[in-house]
Length: 182
Image (cartoon, rainbow, N blue to C red; front, top):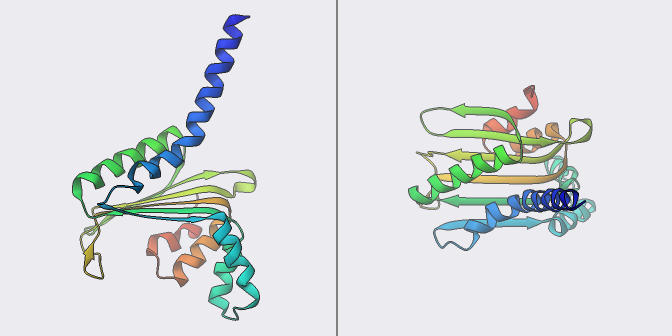
């Protein structure tokens, strides 16, 4: 009987650690002064979705449709090579521990882009994780980036994410996701 209780306690602990690991991946770096952290909550996406009646732009409508499905969006960026290396290692560990499916890897002379996903019912995406590393030519308002880590969670349609990416000038590889089998 005690062995069963110990197994149950161990299983519950593993589940708790697994569900908190995504949170802690971003929390680990969020307060670091050399890391830019952006978190958009489900409440903000619901607010965006409610603005639908105000917006008459077809491109914005694609975003509004997707906003209804998103529960969070988290982004970490840094230009510090040491921190970038740590984020990269932690992101790969996270993808492995969560058993995320590798959707696509793009390597070129300017960067490396990794896409991972957790699929749920009807092959919809529960989490999309994008890691961009070794950025060489990205300069935004005088600031260079070495690494970008992005996580989108919700009940997502991959096709909508691809359409949104192509409309918003997000990395072109993100726009290609809906054309790939995974």
